[in-house]
Length: 208
Image 1 (cartoon, rainbow, N blue to C red):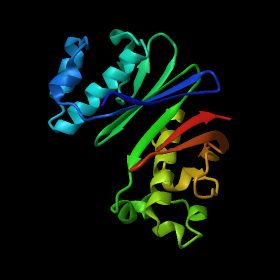
Image 2 (cartoon, one colour):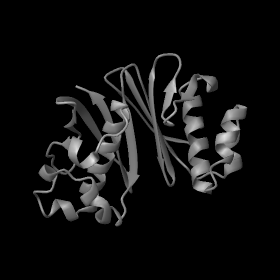
Image 3 (tube, rainbow, N blue to C red):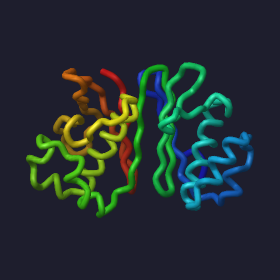
């Protein structure tokens, strides 16, 4: 299945999702992959990771982002040489891209039971007050995607998810909430845009 979801936020940010049902060969159709792209693809031994990589390239093609415009810094984070901001994510059978004129971060995760086992490593003390929520897979997954999106938007290595990232309280089905990054004695506020799908949730982070 090709492009499955598209949204424009505040006239400056585009979000695109691709539900991956194609074979690896089908996903390569119509793509122009550079030598570097092919090397990156070959390093992905997992079939779903290769498909995710190719689905991202299909989304970039839909956005008319020229292949050589996309580069990666020494930490592996993607950026565009034309000055626009980009963030990418994929999980199992879904890939997503956010393209924007302002700093942006995006993350997408499937709902999985194992999120409960790692929650103590990323939940801030203020996010752990409601005992019902901290055992809820959907709530925990939203918090995780929110923090991943914040991290990507802030573009500063070494941020501690549990201590330096805080997501304001939100109700089930919320569309927006505020997230805070505590860095060098300053608070950096971001708007977190929540989007919900059948088996996954997505968070987009943009500066307030």
